[in-house]
Image (cartoon, rainbow, N blue to C red; front, side, top):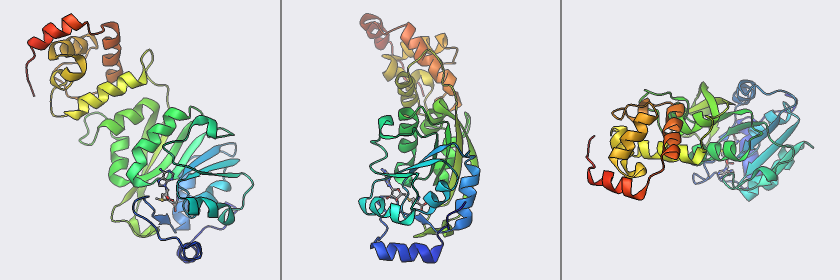
Length: 295
Ligand code: SAM
């Protein structure tokens, strides 16, 4: 890492000079610990040919670490003051700053195409940002993100875990994720009142023959009523509990199971079964009449 990294004194001085008062609304907690930066860059498993995408560079703490490790860095920052100041803090020819909302960026905005997402994410939008970028940027081979510890636990959880839910299954559609360590509040300014966690992920081939949106609709329905059996939880989505049961059986999933026990492949199998057996108005109307409520 060739560039000098920012410690607590530099971060305060930089913020004062730029007139930046961190806002909670934008999740602005800045890293001021060079060891944590080195740890994140090392844990990301970057190679020199990578193109890093950083969401929320803030004052540039992590950006300084990234420019020394890869051939190009795209930094997407929503706060115009921070975006404008970044090239002054990180004077690297291979850094491109995008003053944009990470939720709105498209693949065409980036040249060269990003291969790794490495970010200390704004915690209030962390999960939607990761999912949006994985959908929008097929060039991403993986990433390392810092998020609230509780969210990190959800993202890496597998079926059967208490915290397995929509973020876990949707991330599993795109990638294999694993925990990559815990980060204490003291390394941030201002100090957040939550622990943070690192999540590493590597892109995988998603289940074949079925549309992502169709699978995600099943996932959303299953977890909207996570205590119910899938037969009941998927009744609304399927057009009746009877049809939900048929589709579950066709997918090889027990109608009495709950969403929290299913892998992403099983959710995909349910969506695929619905595609093979589209709901006919009459059929589902008849099934609807016999709808039972189970829990
Ligand atoms: N990477 C810096 C660090 O580690 O010190 C700052 C991380 S701070 C947790 C989150 C950053 O994301 C802030 O700079 C904030 O302005 C920015 N941000 C918040 N929402 C954003 C969005 N939707 N798109 C892009 N950047 C965003």
